[in-house]
Image (tube, rainbow, N blue to C red; front, side, top):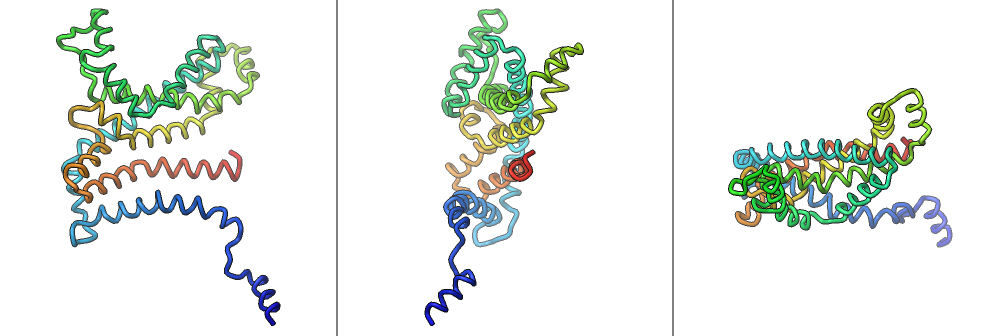
Length: 289
């Protein structure tokens, strides 16, 4: 009788989880606890104000107080991503086409910044871009700047320089991996019919690595939007980035409602990029392109 029940349980599948689900359980639990739960909690609290619920007061207050900072964040994210893609792509294509020792050295040297955290980059940029820092001293020695009225970089200019110094090598690293896969016969065929370097880059290399360029742009955009250290250390005047506002709202005012509302706005800003990246990765895994 007992053996018959065991056999029926095996045939019916029982209550035990299949092995693939058991293997996925640790990773799924990690994502749920550290990503999904905080996201849901942040969205819920952004609509909560004291005993009330389902109110837009936090969003109205966030927009009234930080409208300039929200617009500033969008400008920095899009402009920084665009410049990083253009310059990183140029660096990668130069290293791919040139094959010289100088190109190899420049490409290898640029990779060092990928491994530096943003807190170190921020401190380096503060010393480099200060009113009497290294950059202004060089410009003053070249008679381009008067040190009594130096160029001010603790604003959007310095912030963009910091992001580009960090993100250009990252974009170049991603793009270079795809460029190395392209066979030299394509380049030789183009040159044999009189194509110049710019034609090779624009008409052959870039179209063949377009998916990689888009993914590099997505990752760069999300990194710029979510970075706190660099704008906190480099921007000393208003407007600043939303990540700094979130920290100030929690640290000095204990206003978690407005802080969560600002966080949700950043989620919405990065969500289209993240969705595209995930769909691209899934399609590449399933269909191979």
